[in-house]
Amino acid sequence: MMALTADGQVEPQLVAARDARYGVSSSEKQSQRQHLTYPNRIDPGADHWQGGEAWQLNLEKVPVKK
Image (cartoon, rainbow, N blue to C red; front, top):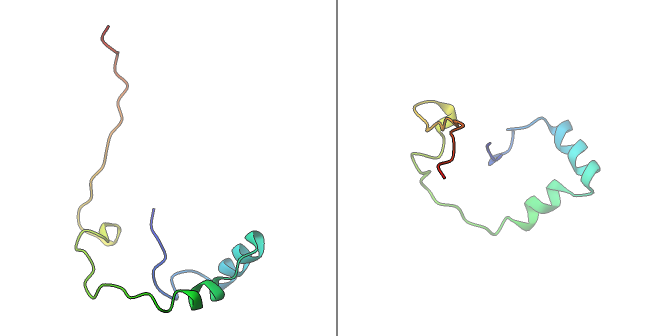
């Protein structure tokens, strides 16, 4: 799972289709958020999907002890 955090990370026609489907305006939401400030530094563990190492959990079915 990832979040879109910058312009150009998704095809504009997909955004337009999503906006129409859910009755929202991405450009209006973007203008409403212009006052927000963001940190200058990205946490080093935030973008594992781009490369490096990440944690993986393996689920295993086991009997429950009574």
